[in-house]
Length: 233
Picture 1 (cartoon, one colour):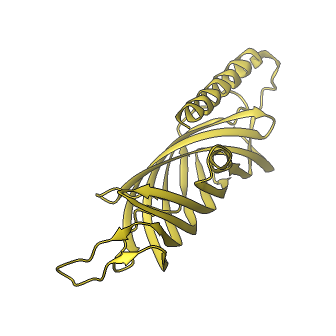
Picture 2 (picture 1 turned 90 degrees about the horizontal axis):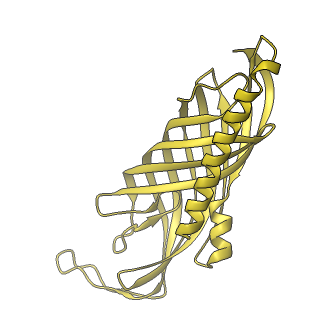
Picture 3 (picture 1 turned 60 degrees about the vertical axis):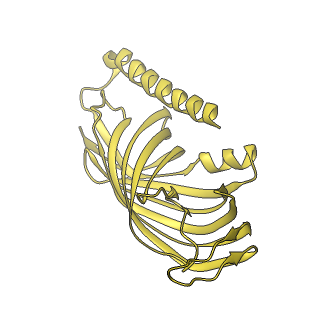
C-alpha cells in the first residue's frame, strides 16, 4: 500500500509541474485579458476504492467538493462512508459509520495565465457517527470502576466524534476542468462519545485515534470543475 501512495503522489506532482511548463510555453498565444473560472468542483477520493481492491479490511466512498469564493479562497467539504476492520493489541474489531467535513482552503500558488492549479492550505471541522463490532478478543474488567469484561461478538453503537483538521494539498489540472489531487491532514479530536468499556480506537473520517487523541490522514482525488462564470484575473 505504501508504494501505491508514493506512486500516486509522484504522479500528482509530475502532472502539476507539466501543466505549469505547458502554460509557460503557451504564453505568446494567449489573449491579453485572462479570466479565472469560478464554479463548483466535485469529485471522489481514490484511496478507499484502491484499498478495497488490495485488501478486504477497508471499504468506503468519499465525495469531495469545493466552491471558489474569490481569487484565493475556496469553501470545501467532504462527505463519506467507511467500514474498517482493525487488529490492534490482540483485539479485532470493525468500525462502521459516516462522516462529514466542512472548511475552507487557501490557494498559495500564483497561477500563470489562465491556469487553475493549486497548492493549498486548509482547515476542517469533522463530525462522524459510527459503531464498533468486537470480532475477536476480550476486554478486561476495570478494577476501579467495576466494569464487566466484554468478549466477542459484541456491538457498541450510538457513538460520535467531533474534530479539527489542518490540511495541505495539491490539485493539478490534467485535462480541461479535470483535476488530480493529493492532500495530507493532521487531526485533533475535540470531543467524542465512547462506550463505557470500549475506547474509540478508530473513527470514520478521522482514522486511527492515537493516545493523545491526534491522527493523520491523506487522500487522492479525481474531480471535475463545473464552471459557472469567469472573472478577469
